[in-house]
Amino acid sequence: MDSRPVIWVFGLVILGFVGGQVGVACGGVASTSCGFQAVYNFGDSNSDTGGVSVALGAVPPPNGITFFGKPSGRVCDGRLIIDFIAENLGLPYLSAYLDSIGTSFRHGANFAVSGSSIRPGGYSPIHLDLQIGQFSQFKSRTTALYNQVGSNGKSTTCTSSIPRPEDFPKALYSFDIGQNDLSFGFQNSPEEQVRASIPDILDQFSKAVQKLYDEGARVFWVHNTGPLGCLPYSVINDQSKPGNLDANGCVKPFNEVAMEFNRQLKYRVSQLKAQLLHSTFTYVDVYSAKYSLISNAKSLGFEDPMQFCCGSYYVLKDHHHLS
Image (tube, rainbow, N blue to C red; front, side, top):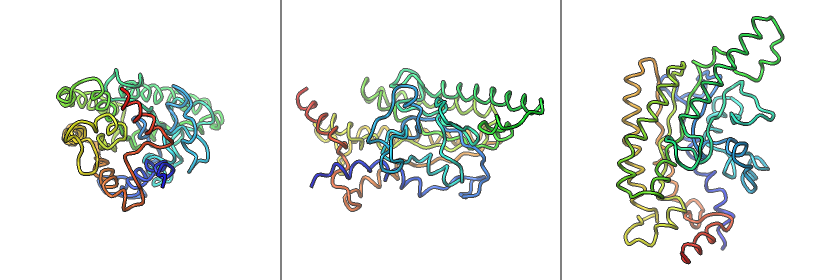
């Protein structure tokens, strides 16, 4: 039986599983009634709701066809974790900050762009510090506009699609980024060098959080990185090395570095919580959720979780054999 149509939805199932298992933290307690009026998200393709599509080229079908019925800007077939978070909070899906067509930022904005990394110089020019800079400008300009319209006593119709200034310190600030720092590193340097780069990557992450805190952000939601060694392209490129795969067919060295990154990220989050006295942090273990799903893929109806969808797997595999 051809498993490719089933694999189309693999990413959606992973994200739906995680999104269905976590609640949004309100003072450290999971709840569906936190009272957040806005969400501001920073990240890569794991949480991009349209940034790459408007900035670097439209995302084509079959992306988006199952849930949205058409390409939605997401590099997947359905919803992302950030979509489930918005649903859980009773908010609309986040508009991409770079999207100027029919968008509303009344309840937040999404600065994530596929391929983005924490440090500059990866797959995308829109790294985390640039995303933070975009947020700072967004906050400054929308606040000035909101206050100007209010002071002139004009109709608030033109402000209905921008956030209220008082909502910024009460918003949820979420991060799903870091995967591309490791992935780009593996493609361009030895494993030891990638591992050694983790402290600097997390230094940049900590600086980004500090900047948001200085802007008034107080509640942070941080995803760790997933099992990189289980991504199909990782397996295709590294399966020929003796003893390189674990019992589930994932590349062990990549997953080991991802786990080390997560260990250090969790420690950084605890440090930030101690340093930023009025902050609340929720650290989300995406790695464990995804790896558990991959480990049990066959019992959940997937024939081969290591295959790309839509024929891409076979093209890359043939190229790998020829190279």
